Image (tube, rainbow, N blue to C red):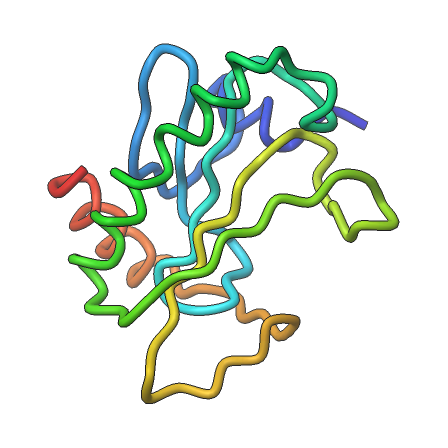
Length: 134
């Protein structure tokens, strides 16, 4: 099976893009834990973070603060969680390195493992707002 994230990177699948540069993209998660849940992904395919060079890992994570801040400012979230899974036993669903940025809201009792399918209109609108802030 082809990599879904590689298909997104190569514009073969649609996504709700919120950030991109020469080596990375970020987009809204299709099955978010909460509003604004996003993924930061290296353009180069690696299955696990241990397959990457140290400088590539550092470069990937250096994008997280800017993107997270844009998500927080756009969604008015109170905080955020980061997630990065490696391998099936760690619950890595897509075998392409990615970092989850998951906004957290004081007024919600969101459960980490429960996900929702986002409404296309709302996801497009939110992605557009975040892109303006990144």
